[in-house]
Amino acid sequence: MDEKNVTLEKLTEDLTSHIRINRGFVIWMGFLIIGLCICLYAYLQQLRFGLGVAGIRDYVSWGLYLSNFVFFVATSLIGMLISGVLGLIGIKWITPLARIAETIAVAFAALAGLVIIMDMGRPDRLANVFIYGRFQSPILWDVSVVTTYFVLSALLLFIPLIPDIAWVNRKTDHLPGWLKKTYSILSLNWTDTPEKNKIIQRCVRILLILIIPSALAIHTVTSWLFAMTTRAGWDSTLFGPYFVTGAFVSGSSAVIIAMYFFRKNYKLHNYITDKHFSKMGILLGLVMLVYLYVNINEFLVPGYKLKTADATHLHELFAGRFAIMFWFVQIGGLILPIILLLFNRMRKPLPMLFIALAVFIGAWFKRYIIVVPTQEHPFLPIQYVPYNFKFYTPTLLEIAITLSSFFMALIIITLVSKFFPVIPIRETAVERGLIEE
Image (cartoon, rainbow, N blue to C red; front, side):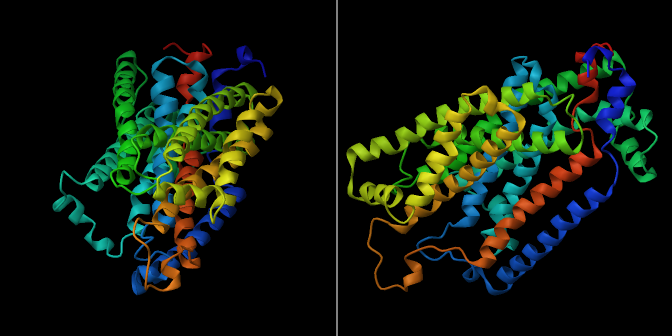
């Protein structure tokens, strides 16, 4: 479709036609809710019988739960990269992708806080982190920056939505009554005037500026939870930039996956085009190159020194118990995608989907490799303990509880994308010259 021939009415229809409850939506939500209920039953068993139902023990006290926490915090940073960094420097092609990135950021940041509760034997004592928290503790910093980043991301998602909500409420007739009433409340009596548009633009710009240091802080502080110990594999000053660059990789892959399914299911081919996939492919390749450089540094320096503890740690990664997972992450989730993204034909929508899925899965396993192997070989030998204390193996209940976070994230993303425009209507109309800014 020729962009110049698209009318404002046609654009509004295209970007709001998915806002309805159809059979596919009911089936998909039913699957997510049933899956979540099964996983929540597993969590109730953990609450009843304690953390002993999980595979974590005295030595490996951080397992799937902390790996998942680090992954969710990492993926949430994509909102800062797309909206904050690229938005502030005036990159125009991100317009149809900014809301997708912010939705993912809000969902993953919200779930990051819940994921950490899964690792608590007494979640009822969570308030003690705030009541009795010590400034010297990185855990207090982590809770604070996660909360701050979530609030900023939620505002950055909601405030640009206000004009679109008001526009959809006025211009569409197919919406059910309860949804129109919800839109009336959320639109805050918005009217499209130059003064109010300037207020929105000013608020968004302030949030974009604030979210950059907040996002850098959220994953840097998370890295400090590891780097402030002397354990082999964690004792590194590189962990701050290492975690941040890895976050851009997992977040970019998540956006590409979402782009593909929104484009296909919501029929947005004229708005999320092959050009957007190509641009995101280039962006993903660039952040992966930086991440590859940091990965090389992560292993080259301790490999050169080869202290006793470092030698044990590296051997377990390269040729030991974690070798298959390690090489899958490095080759299948990093090196091979970088090579494939060099070719134009691999930056088309369908190849990009498979590349992004490989990177996304590899990014999760990378967090597992960061968290678990180090704890299995501490400085002192493990003596006079049961066999299952020496090696960590996740239990079925633990896996189910971990999956619950993905079900909840998908529910949030589905609901936001289903009942609100996935692509900014007003910004798109302004860019196409259909209305004045």
